[in-house]
Length: 430
Ligand code: EPZ
Image (cartoon, rainbow, N blue to C red; front, side, top):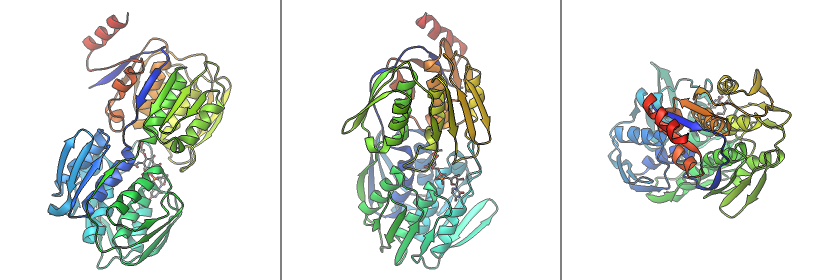
């Protein structure tokens, strides 16, 4: 099983280039099958979640041609099956975006019901509410979601919960429904805007994405396009926080600073300097960082996908910090691992109380999920001594060449798969 081995204690310095947004790519790849023309998608992140969804898209009969590591051509003309197997949903929940895409295009789709996952129960009741409002019969049986519509007609839909997935899935179905759809209490994340822009580049008529009211005027059909995916705000934030955690000085390039405002604000609150450029941000950390409070909220609030990384930075900030997780019910599983590295964190319900310590010590830790795994790598880089992070398959779901990019900033980190390689790394570092 592959692991990361890290020798901590070195400030990160230099420049890192951010890739395309995983959570925009997953919606866009699914939406790409909604036309029979060829669609070319650029700036695609080469991460396992994207590669699994491409396999699912091929499995239903679409043609998928990888032109290079970051560019793929998809054509939905040859789709011969509207049923998405459980094996893909089990690997990545976001395969359920094919439900919205196929339902919008063929008026029917069968997708395995996604289970819960490492960060919570992850219900999809709002997705189903939207599909039904647009005229779909939804049958949940034998672990499948069977969706079928005689006719898809626009509707006025009010989401009970701000949901990224439901917003994207409903937007796709509404794009090919007759008449107008108003989607209220919609999610406003940058990846929602990117999926809406992508659909509009295929001939859809979607207005208001990025606000909490999205208006969709259904069209007959969609056509091919070439589209480049927006930079990944969470990958960017992860590197910004790695710079802060290691008292470094890092320029994060190929970003949209506006998408990072809630993150930059927190870094300034704890005493870092953040300089914004057109397509880059620079984080200059001080080694005298102070505590603060964080509440995870839907965009433009502080993103839940940056909560573990924030907690790691706060673990050595002077004073007592409070991190409240308002989106998912089980997103503090990394705290036990971090405590083994010397952090002083108490979790009560959805609140983590963090008392800053002078420093962390390297240890064996295991990644409980994607973002917590990245946070533990950051902890390893700020800790004294060696840290081994196990279960790095979670991290590879959403970070392309993570250890390569970190090494480019001066980190001592390598991917290893056995004790021999661990010893070799330690000898090299001695
Ligand atoms: C997306 O998940 C992201 N995944 C998550 O990123 C991210 O944490 C989350 O949005 C919030 O920003 C992808 O985009 C592939 P939600 P999603 O629907 O769409 C509740 C990562 O690390 N809810 O916005 O599943 C839900 O339980 C991943 O990249 C319902 O109650 O999240 C949660 O409490 C982790 N009913 C809240 O809404 C529903 O029908 C927000 O969930 C849907 C959601």
